[in-house]
Length: 177
View 1 (cartoon, rainbow, N blue to C red):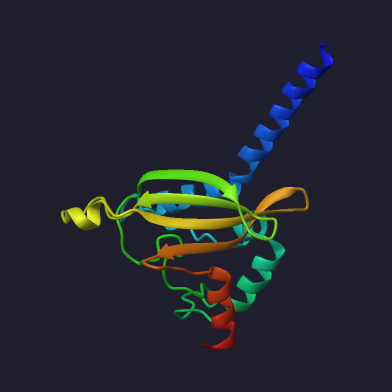
View 2 (cartoon, rainbow, N blue to C red):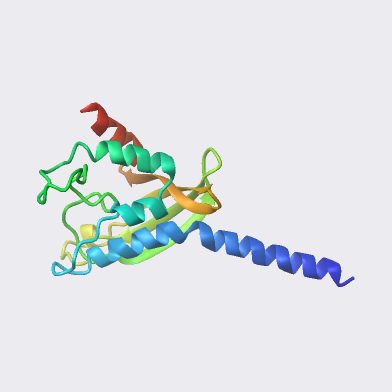
């Protein structure tokens, strides 16, 4: 009789651990993004520096990013090699913004075995315009299991009537489009 409750309890613990683990790379990306937008004096941290790129993103994403980085949006200031191919914050889809407010994360089923991690936030809360101030931005992360850990395989920004793919954008950069 004790075996069944113990098995159910262990199953719940394992499931809970997995559910928390799947959001870890997204939580780290959002923590950096929030820190970047805290103030104008913040030291900007790039989401695709060598360490976070290797730890938080899938091998497929890393490979595509490295190719896209050969086509920087701006000249490389220190001539150390490939630079950022975007020229804007890929999470907020902007070069300007306010400190992020009301950041929430939820998970759901995704496509092709990925988990959909949805993040919503207000990025214009510091503005006086009520319509902009209350605007909620939405970003989806495709999180997969690779080498026994959760990693981001793509990022989708949701706009008016459309959703894009950062992987598709990088492939376009590679093709020179």
